[in-house]
Amino acid sequence: MNQLSRRTLLRGAGAALALPVLDIMLPNTGLAAGGTTGPNRMAFVFFPNGAIMKDWTPQEVGTNFTLPKTLTPLADVQSDLTVITGLAHDKARANGDGAGDHARSSAAFLTGSQPRKTDGADIKLGQSIDQAVAEKVGKETRLPSLEVGTEAGRQAGQCDSGYSCAYVSNISWRSEATPTGKEINPKAVFERMFGSNGENAKEVAKRNFFRQSILDFVAEDAKRLQDQLGKSDRHKMDEYFTSVREVEQRIERATDEAKRTLPDREAPEGIPKDWAEHTRLMYDLMVLAFQTDTTRIATFMLHNEGSNKSYKEIGVSGGHHELSHHREEADKIEALQKIDQYMVEQFAYFLKQLKSVKEGEHNLLHNSMIVYGCSISDSNRHRHEDLPILVAGHGAGSINSGRHLKLKGEVPMTNMFLSLADRMGANLGSFGDSTGTLQEL
Image 1 (tube, rainbow, N blue to C red):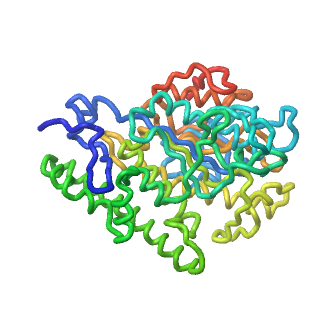
Image 2 (tube, one colour; image 1 turned 120 degrees about the vertical axis):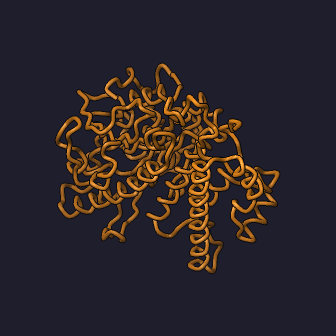
Image 3 (cartoon, helix red, strand yellow; image 1 turned 135 degrees about the horizontal axis):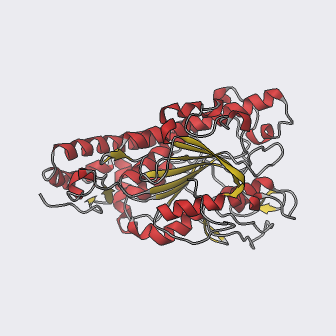
């Protein structure tokens, strides 16, 4: 049986569907034989407004730790987690620039750089770690990186104490003056991953009009491939096609719902009304992107920094940002903890989905490094040390997971970024305000 290229695509009119890792793609000494592991992936998930740290931080250090209240949804993947205490983002502090901790939080999160305080066109920050790594290894995949979110943001105007809205709306920066921008529409993300390029736009429009699945367009190519596959690979393909179709159907339902609820205005395409469903749909798209090696680098902003969204579905009617300045009021702290845990529930869903996808002797979560956190710990006092940070996944076997790692002193978060970049094969040497790598990881 001939070996199949890892970059093989199923093609049809207006469609190019990437494939998951199949045994036929691997040499006898590779994944199928347990000799190596799959490619490493890296993602960053950002949540706004800090956390209630007493319910976030484990009391025990090392492998025998109990998940605190906020992290209890992660119980099924605890062995795949590294909870890190002691990371800091000095460049999220004022450092002489006065108010604006929220803008600096999102700006510094992946850059480790101090944002220029301006609400004009002269924004200046620094390249983010996802883009620095994408420059080195992004050519190995069809998309160098993927940037998603659930809340639209502005790229101009003032959003926090004299800081540009570009700082609160983006965590990914292509250069010091250019945010990468994020996509909040699941349908647009799906088309970017699996749809056509510009020259086949008419075919995509036709498919959308007639509500055909992308799988219909690649069916002939898929049939030819199936004839080459063994039993195990055929099963993998069936599972993969099922997951692709399920995502398509959820996007279609969201589109229909938007059209029903907004009859007198142009309806958004494929954006669920429910935040949790929107978030899970984005997570599922990230799983597909990693599963098919469409990209190995992704960022996800659950909300823009300083977001004042209310979460009535979990009994929290107050705005998130307003509640975050809780002044030690018990009812506000309780509400904030509920929000923290609600977001962690969605993250747990993502990790379980990654873990369910087999890749050789391991799974996608094993072959990933997923950072979850933000650049504010106690938002009531705008603290930027002892940050709430999780690293999920084993980094293709390079991370000793299943522990609470407590660091001494204040360790720049950029030290961790350097260590992750090394594991991605992008040896940067230094990054942002780094002082070295995070050897403890």
